[in-house]
Length: 376
Image (cartoon, one colour):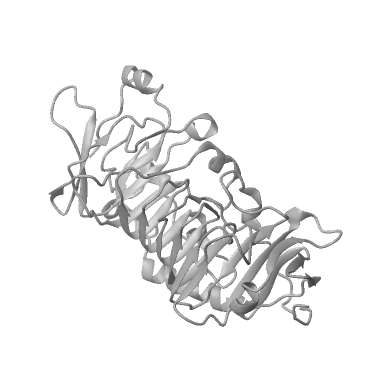
């Protein structure tokens, strides 16, 4: 079934809208499921992680079994269970489009959990600049429908989940965001995400990296600060949670190494208790090439991935830990301050800060060898 493309006149009238707007825009509703249908080329095949590559999961700002969007964020989402919350925006902004790496520019919701049918709604940014020239497809659950409101002049749609009418409309004014809408039921098998298989493969990647420590130039210590100096290629280091939270940390290229020629996996090990709390402005106060996370810091995030292995507790990302990709396939990751870098987790929520999309730009690995670590 095809439906509802905005007219040229309507698009012209609405082009002046700025800021955050509701997100299902100019689109083909319920794209046809026939084999080989050209419109389905907007959704790529999903590639599962290997021992040495995150695959397609690494391309979303959030990839999770459960994700609750409780704050503004800039990036795409793939979730088995997605909970939208009232007035919280998400989507590809121009700076994300220009700076994020290993990107996935579509949205995938296997299930949608509506906590409050009177207030919960989908909000996304209206694009401008280079991002506006690209169409971002959305995959809705098989048990949902997008229905156009009645009336000849109606420009709104409503979301229906399991036959339940969600009161807040999806306004058809976000003309530069979602050109096509699909449902999981419409996709070919290789386009669908099997989240159980995805997380099994991500755990294999995580386990491999835990045993793949490489030879960086050194981890130097000066007072309460430690610096990881990386050689070209993908570096891997193991740090206990106790050591990581006892020092201030910076990552940089070793002498003679181009800063664009390295990546780093930091395996956080020996975590005791059910909470890793990185709130506040104390240690580790982590930085990459001297830069920390924040509203305008993107580029360094792509260099570092934090691997929390099989830790299944609560990880709180706050002011002293706000840059880098997070891999925590068994944990609950809560973002309480703006974080630059993708989040891969069993469960995630941005309760008090933004998530800025930036994937891991992993470099080719050399033969694993022992990391040089000074005596503490």
